[in-house]
Structures are given as structure tokens and as C-alpha cells.
Length: 522
Image (tube, rainbow, N blue to C red; front, top):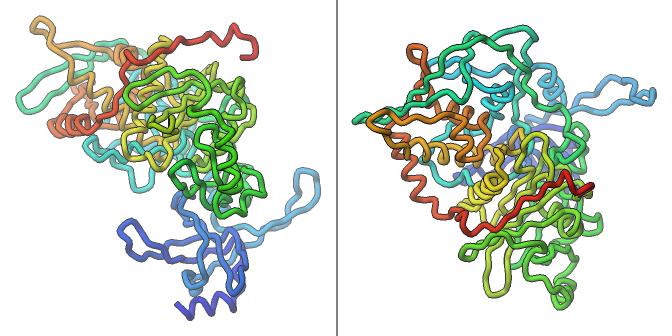
């Protein structure tokens, strides 16, 4: 190690260099993943290097000392040829290997991989259904098991992730080999001794044209909180806050958040847990608490059961609170653009009550008017409350609101890795719950359609179809779609539901939807 440290001082390691860096994995074992140097700083006596581990999430980025660098495998950044810039002036900048890989990846579209199970022709649905059936690839989490632990509850953002794959846009005029009837066709459930299955009878109809993947190349300018990653710079790629104290918790931020520059040098940033105002010292926080009258988020309490409450906050009426909430959330949501214009959004904050007040657990935001049927824009469970079922509770609450509104909803896509895991788990449990509760009707096989599943759950039918495909429940047999629920699927689902203690009680929801289209500018 000392030799490596000496080499680091002899060789000038600059931004953009790549080399193996020592870190501990989840089993607390040493590993040497390849990392890129994003920044270098000098402190009295030594240098520190801010590294991003290639193919790892940005939340693992960190400052490291020279003794953790493997200088024998150092890769220097390549120089780009001088090219004209937008204003016509020549310009050049060093490029890292990652930039070259990204440029190549952008020019190549990935086609969806075929399922290893029995080949199934496309399920019926709109053009969006073909897009929704393929999700971003997730590192180390490609296999889904309904009986796994509640790690699916750990939420990040519902926005794009670096591992997302774009589907190849289909050429106009190309037709599917076997596109079948509409989603209102009947699903019949069969009962067997050793396993349960449902058969979907969808007689083939006329072929329809393929559509493009429909994933936007840039975020929508109204309402969308999906960030455009093309304008990332070195500042926003680095965490700028070391620690946040929120009530009785101290949080280590995962990502950059645009708090005022003068606060980024503090060892701890203090937040009032009720109004979320940021302060530079504990003394300032104590003085603020003597004047802050809030003991719960501003807005209307629309749900309470036990110690769990939900508050609805209008981004126009409570602009300061909404902006402070976005600043806090940005510390844990990478691919979210922080818009200071919070007017088009509603924020639903989940809290836990004790004698001191209502403490924030997590939140989700949604557009007041969504043309794409989005019922969630961003969603977050704060780290101290993750892996405890609160994530699914937030998701379930968003769909309860959709039920009251009489709509089907879907989260803003594409999803992040953690958001995708949570939604997959929720959709799977919700759909399996319905399929397993179906009873025979007068000795006949019970029947249900995909549209009926969508109406019961308020889950958009494209998400219903994609979940059934992802779980590999669909087989194609003698011109019919068969949904087969094996004993493993059933047992795993029952075990998962036994662990899911937190559920939304619709009787405790007091919510009246508003028609925002008649309210001028909200």
C-alpha cells in the first residue's frame, strides 16, 4: 500500500483518469473495481481523490486516500480533437473512456431480448404496452422473486437511471407476427390439485403496426421532474453535502443537491424536521425551533390510521415548504431536476406521529394535470425508514388516490433501479392477490379481463401486462394465452403478504379530487 501511495505522489493523477480503487463490498470483503477520478483536492499533508466506481450507482461515490489507488493500472484520459463549438469557436476538452463509451452507446439502440421461457406472441394493448413491457436493466437484481425480502421497498426516484436501455424504434409499416385481441377479452381461471393456473383466451385478430419505444429523449418542460442528463457537469456529479441532521436522524446524502454554496462546507447541515428550513448550526436550529409553530407539514391531513398520516400540500400555496422538500429529496434522488416553480405539483407527505409531532417518513409528488395519466412524478422514502414497508405504503396510497379520482395511473417513466424494484413488487403482489381470490361461478371457471384488473386496482393496463410478462406467468398454448400460477409463486406470494403489515385503509382516507382544469393557473 505504501508503494501505491508513493506512486500516487510521483505520478500526477488528474481528473478523468481511471484505475482500480480499493473498497469494501456488501460482505465486507476487499475488492478493486475500476473507478474514474472526478476531482482532486489537497488537505494539509495529503491529497484526496473523489472517485466514481464504473457500473456502480453514484451514491457509492466517495473521497479516497492515495493508498487505495492501484497506480499500476492507471489509465490517462484521451485528448479529443479540436471541434467547432455552438458559437463557432474551436474548443477541446479531455475525455474519459466513459464519455467515449456513452457516445458509442447513444448511437446504438438495444433490441429487447427474447424470454428464455416459451415464446409468447405480443399481448394486446396500445402502442404504450409494448414499451411498458421492457424495463431498464438493473445491476445485480435482474431476477425477481416474489418471496424475497422487503428490499423492494427501498425507494429512490421514479426517473431515468443510467442503466436504462432504449428499445430499437420499429420501422413504419412493419407488423407483428401475432398480435391478439383487446384487453377486454376473458381470462378463465383453472384449479388443479398441484398448481393453479389461469388461461387467457385471446383469439387472434388483424395485425397491427409496431410503434416506437416512446421514451422521450428530453424531459417535458411542463410538470416533468425527469432531469436531462446531457448537461451534467463535474459539480453536479459530486456530493456537496457531508451530513444532514433531520430531527433525531443524521443522514448521509447520496447525490448532489443545490443548497446554497456557503452551506456545502459545513460538517453538518441542520434542518427543521417540520418546516424543512435549512440552518447552518445547531444554535441557529434551536433558536428557530422556539419560533417555528409547525408540528406537522403544512396543508390538509387527508389520511390517518394509527400513527401514520398523509398530508396534501399544494406547491403553489406552500411554495417555501415544497422547495425545501425538493432540496432534501434531491440528496437521495439522482435523476430529478429541481424546479423552483413548484406550482404545477401536489406533494403528499407521509408522517409518523409521536408526542413531539408528525415526523416526515417519505413523500411523493404528482402533477395537478397529467396528460400521460401519471399518478406519481417523484417518490422517496427517507433512508432511516427504508426496508420497513413504507415504500409500498406510499405506492399503495398513490393508487388509492387514483381510485377515488376514477382513473388508472402509472408512475412517470422510465423508472430508476430502486423505484423499479418497488413497483414491480407492488404490481406483482396486487395482481396475484386478485387472481388468487377469484372464485368459480356456478361450477364454471371464473373469468376476468385485463381491463377489469386495471379497473379494480387503478394500475394502468400496460403495467398489468408487463408485470404478467415479467413474472413469466404467460404461456401460449393452442392459440390461447395461459396464465400459470405455480405452487412456488403462490407460496411465495402468501409469505410476502404475511410480512406486509402496513396497508392503506380506504375508510381512513378523506380526499376530494379537484378539477384543476377549471382553476385557471392552479
